Amino acid sequence: MPKFLLSLILICATTFVWAQDSQQEKLEQRKAQIQQEIRDNEKMLQSVRKKEKSAVNEYLIQANKIKLKEKLINTTAKQERLLSNDMYINQVQVNKLKKELKVLKEDYAEMILKSYKSRSEQSRAMFILSSESFLQAYKRAQYLKQYTAFRKNQGLEIQSKTAQLVDFNAKLDGQRQVKKKIIVENQKEKVTLEAEKKEQQKLVNALKKDKNKIAADIRSKQSESKRIDRQIDRLIREAIAEANRKAAAERAKANPGSEMKAPVSSSKIALTPEDKVLAADFKANRGRLPWPVEKGFISLGYGDQPHPLHPSITVHNSGVEITTEDGASARAVFAGEVSKVIVLSPVNKAVVIQHGDYFTVYQNLSSVSVSQGDKVSIKQSIGRVRTSGDTGKTIIKFLILQNTSNNNPEGWLQSR
Image 1 (cartoon, rainbow, N blue to C red):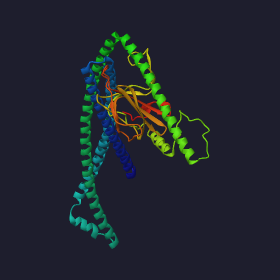
Image 2 (cartoon, helix red, strand yellow; image 1 turned 90 degrees about the vertical axis):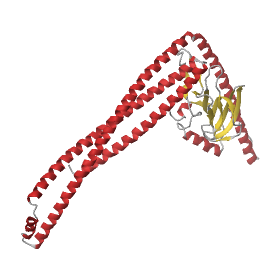
Image 3 (tube, one colour; image 1 turned 60 degrees about the horizontal axis):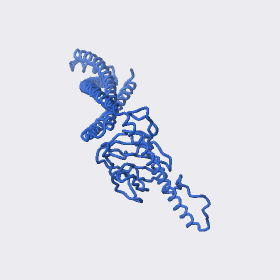
Image 4 (spheres, rainbow, N blue to C red; image 1 turned 120 degrees about the vertical axis):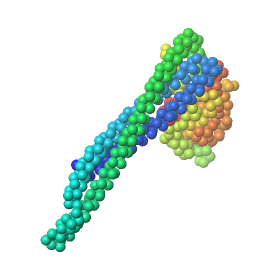
């Protein structure tokens, strides 16, 4: 096989191994992230159990923990498959090096034997002196010089390939140990997953006894949620109308002869050039926005859906509900201006932040640290999430709207 083709194959194999290493590193980081989320869930679960407030909340946290365990097992399985592929490539390299070393050593041994038979300096001198011309003598001298250099290079190549073989064998040994560890970890996680599922089933059985009470509670909360949605919609429409009135007044001031012909809209905001830039920036970050709390999980998704405990009951959610830890801070997901601070009840407040023609709403706050008109930066704390005295839940409800149209926040937030 030509030397160029061999070099090309080696470069391709090396590049593939680098890519494999990079994937392994990403999987290891993802595994560490999932393990941290599991620990955070465990803390929340312990907190709920201590308060002994709500079996429903315990069920939801337990369900998320099971989901994270399944993700962890899948990630570890991917690591194992990737490692097996990497080990196969390394084994191919080992086999290739062994074959090359065998051929090199056989050639080198044959060359040494021939050199030994004609080893005397006298025979070498006679080889040159027996030349028929000066040019032939010069060529023979050059040949002997090249032959000596070739022997030296062959020896060095054997040393280099032997060192490579040792490295690949050491890497394979290390990978075998890592794979063994991963397999043990995976088996352990599967055992704990089964235990978690059994624990969850106990909770389900316990909750079935209080089915009517829980169903009534769900309906009551749905009614309360719809009332708050209407209130937020009204306040956002007021904010849009106010912003449009100010914009119209500014235009009238700049052009005294003009008249306002169209009524002021309360459903679509008239953007200033600055607002257009902010809205475009917000839209460009779809799928990359930070979460409104540092830790937590989505315990109720967006839109119409069966209740997680009672599938026969359909619940509606205008945003997402994120269960977080006790005392968690709510934070702005993007730069903008505080449009409204709403007091929904004596213990429940909400903050509305405007980002051009987009609005983000942070609901179920016990305290607020910003005021209407404040400029906020990304991840800036805007208040503290309320922990319910009845259920022990610490949940923030988070909404994203463009003008008055609700969006699914899950599509906007960074994946976890």
